[in-house]
Image (cartoon, rainbow, N blue to C red; front, side, top):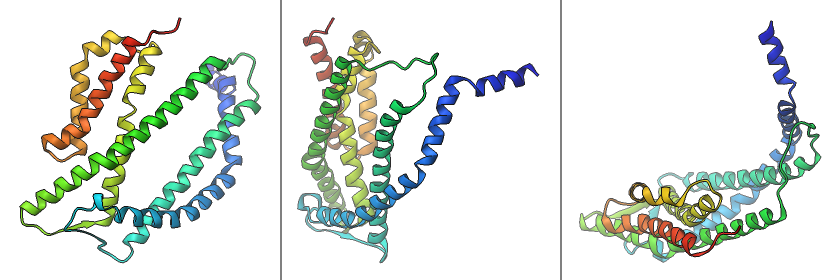
Length: 260
């Protein structure tokens, strides 16, 4: 009996009530989110066709003697549908973030639940972090587009040619390879920002990162090996920048003084 009463008290607790309000709020937004997904899907389908056409025309991504083919009549349509779906989901995700920020101001927060306010200096630091993240992601995308992808695709082409094979690349697999490496590079170039935030936020000590430096290097090499062909040069093109950016972050943290 006491366990039943305790469970009922838990369900009626202020914090659980907040989650109930959140669930009710999301249910009220289902139709709006569904409409937004459909809008993004319809908008994304022609954009996907333009994007695929743009990729195929990039000569530095298609080595000489290589053909991009489809293996069934619906392959291009399916690929465009997938991309359109991602566009729709992206719009829904952004809408949820904006809606959550607006909902936080309208929710009835119980008196015994404290939600810390973000100070003006903290908001400024968050804004700077977002801007730096976008800049680093852009640099990573450019690195992938201009250096990493041309090298790896040319390497794969040369490797197949040396074996006397005629190359025809599957459209969906080729687009997936290009997109995954591009996004992977964008995330990999977030390393210095993550390291600086961990150090300046007091979540980890500089000595700990220095102590486990070799382990971090090894993890970078493993990630590079998972994303690249098994040769030293292509591995270095992926793991090398991650290791260098990690070391640069440690150097920046040592040079720039911390605020009081």
